[in-house]
Length: 234
Image (tube, rainbow, N blue to C red; front, side, top):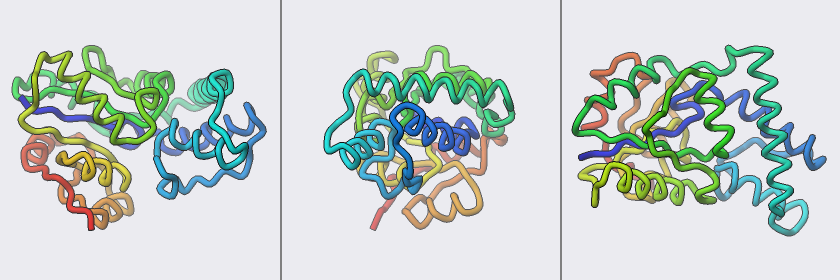
């Protein structure tokens, strides 16, 4: 059996913009932290947990306390919910994503998992808002690790337990950004990108060989999953 691991923002849901806006505002509202750089690729770890840890160490010289994390996360969820209520179009699926997951569940040779750098509650909110059902799919989130590699490994372990597999013949990670390419390379697993235009160009420059625009063509998805290779990052 093979395993495909999906990212969320920009991969299954078209929520990068609203996520960035609410994430930055949550720091300001919850802890009066402003002037945050949104050049996410420049952070040591491009995950909610990694970015938060870096910002707190940079501003306060320490890691955040549990209650500080809870306040930040609660504020973030409130902001996302408000955005959804005011304009649900900000929470669309990537074309064909929901249908692709349903069809993949019927493929006996492929298992599915999710590995996202988002906090769990925000990831589930965005998936639900976009109409992407993940019932019966193992999910690893920012609470499972600081780095994307740790989260991917958590997803693999959860998938092994859920599907009762000692190992998978092939593992493919799907993402939309250069940090997803790098994480797959460092994890020694294959990568399939999702995107077009500038995002596609950046992923190819980072070492991705196979990229699809969206999930509208399921046959193309399956072909690329089978052909996907470990990125060669120089």
